[in-house]
Length: 179
Image 1 (cartoon, one colour):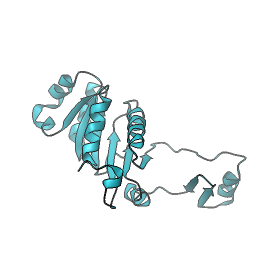
Image 2 (cartoon, rainbow, N blue to C red):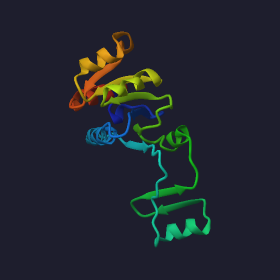
Image 3 (tube, helix red, strand yellow):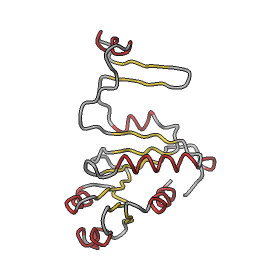
Image 4 (cartoon, rainbow, N blue to C red):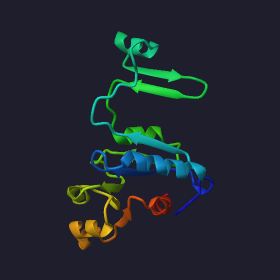
């Protein structure tokens, strides 16, 4: 495919999951890819899974007071931004549908979902993710890529792209080919 944003026919955005264990570099890579995609004119959305309960709203704000009063959904709208806070967990595919107007959606986490995955491997123990997850298309290694290949096995790595953590241009080139 490798389409520029203005060449894409309207349809579903390309979805790529960046997965790995804590401190594997997911957020750093996602941010770098977003920056590169934006410079080429892509509309990019990011969906991040947080295994812990997070709090976007803080005491003293009107929206916090609305939630405290019992509102189950709140929308904050300004001339430049919209934020929606819902008191429920939504399936990834529902969120992706809400972001259908974007060219690319980078998903940080949601390991068990079935979208194209780029797996971050920081330690030798992390290679088990390559075996355990579906739709793995590429692997980013923190150490020598040959070590990852040896740890995982040639058969498993066949057909997968293997990158070093410092090969941002190559990773980006691979991602662009998927769009």
